[in-house]
Image (tube, rainbow, N blue to C red; front, side, top):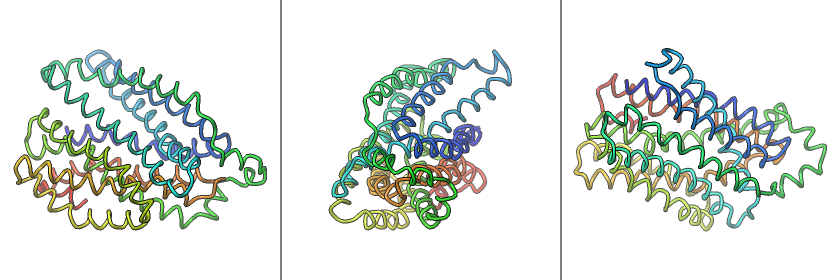
Length: 353
């Protein structure tokens, strides 16, 4: 059941490359702002509709099928959202503080994870398990509509990036900004970008998304406790991302990313052993360590990836490499980890993944 639920979560990620291709073309042709407006409308509506979706008892097999359709809509939206937001901010920044400023995109993203986990924790405090299964699970999805309206209001007053507007004056560059040009001129960058994204997002979706379920399924902690154990380290992550971004501007983004990757390679297994065998304090400490390593990655990634691609193909290049890498390795990480634990009986296997 756990693996099946994570499969429903993962299905959206298979739509992300399609969203990346579609919105990447729009973003390079018509501008970053327009894509950001479309994606937030799609995400808000599809998430809200999940909250009002009738259950299997009411409409039978149509219920899970419609859930999959709405998850795919979310995935299409996310395919343009992450790249669009990162590029929008990066194109407004000067190089000397680009890492710090682009890190705030990830602060917003991780604050969203924290907010979602907080809402889930609050539900377990005020409603019984039966009430949550019956109707209260819908509440977080319904919140998406007012949040989407706020986001849309904010984006309405954005101005297109100076970098894109300057390129728009160069009609030759726009005419050449095709997928063929991207593959001909940025093949190495596509693979480099995908590699950076795999390291960062496998860590993200294992440490942030999967851990609360891991506490319940593998460590047999109750749901409320599992969520509460995750909240402190997640808040720590949000605070540390801009600090790591500032530090990367002073040292170098490359140094920060390499140090974080080596730290994860060395510390993942001992941290998961602490999660498995340690006291409550040791569990929190191990999550803090993993989230610190993740903050080092997240603080730099949105300044590195956009800079790898020329302005005329930047949205296409980032959207394609980002979404293919996330779909294949990262968004599926919770499902794969759940399946691997079930197959091997080894609760430390997520650390090796």
